Image (cartoon, rainbow, N blue to C red; front, side, top):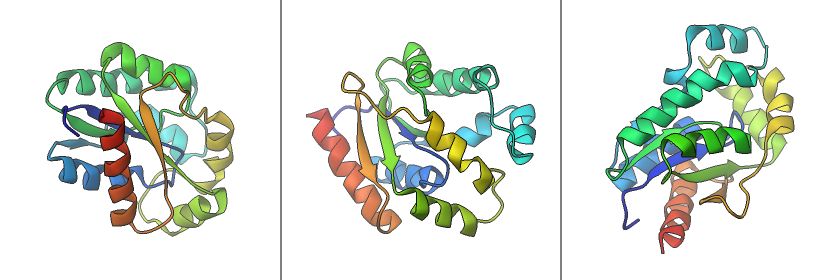
Length: 169
């Protein structure tokens, strides 16, 4: 990418945001921030108990991510964030207007399988249905690209870099 954008790696739980985000940041030569680190403890407790977050729960989390992205404006960065709803992405853009979105997409069965095999994460597979029900894919007027999560992390990252480079042109 020729301009140092802040890329928000988005998608439902289990698509690999935490895996692809750092790989993408490394390839782009910019810092990475993990969205889970921006959650208040109350949000983590709710999700760990299998309770979906409300929009109200998400506001301070989105604002913290937006503030980080704003601070990286013109410098570039990569941050993971589910950003499932258009309203959430609009809130991030309100704080950091030049963010671009990388939507990691995939088949529900593949994603559920990946979630079942990951260790030490607070998001149970039981919440996957609510994630898919909430998901509003990127719309034509939103700056971003969608990349399928089939393949290895390096393959997915390579496709992401190519897609983002095409977006920058």
